[in-house]
Image (cartoon, rainbow, N blue to C red; front, side):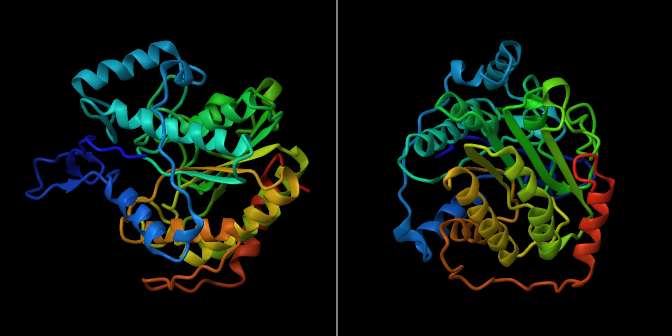
Length: 356
């Protein structure tokens, strides 16, 4: 989705400007990462396999499927005047159109897949969405496109939808909105950062497993900092795959953040292009097994505008079952081969939904 006109404030990285700094740093949630991702996809080896589609902005009625009316009114007021919803989350005057377009892209991707026009669809837009709770903005996110895609899939015939979120941060907004439901399985792999204040009270810990009818349908996989390719691969094969197979969804929504990459300013998980490619390959096989290959993908984080797009390409290549086709342009940090299995084993042992 084209999201021009959304002004990004300068500041101390993601915080408001500091009077102590002579040179402020632009907030990382900017358009460059989307421009470069589209560029890699259109200029790289996958170009001939991709078809690009225009999107419609999400309507009030569509947004209200997940978000409260009072919160939507807050967004409209912020669109007129600008507002910091938290120290990291700023909606500029006129910025709601970009938010609506990104959410509309997610809904359009769900319609594409559920309408039988293709097994895979990628909603490449910004700002990201998975931190947006039903009544609260958080973490650069205002309207939860991940959730809207899942709800659209349910409306179009799916009985159950699994959400897999491998953005480096906990998908707290999606968790919050589906926490008491048993028709959406929410799974989040993330660095173990815990809650970060009023806008993100959820911990992302293993104890958050759902409530009421939704108990047992929220799976958090907090991974240690510096997890790397092998640990993520182990977590997917030993934790995500079995949970999704048990749930047997009719479609999978992927919250596709690349901020777990090895050079991201907002993450500490050091995944490489190869790591993302491997995760996507596992997801491709899992989706083929459980839901006829149906994967609806939204763009989430990824804040190194030079490297995250190559990781997005790696995901696309893995989901399409094609060779990665591009050499990793940056250095790769080798991992301790024995650490991944031990770390995932320890996570399984303490997890109430996974302990054997």
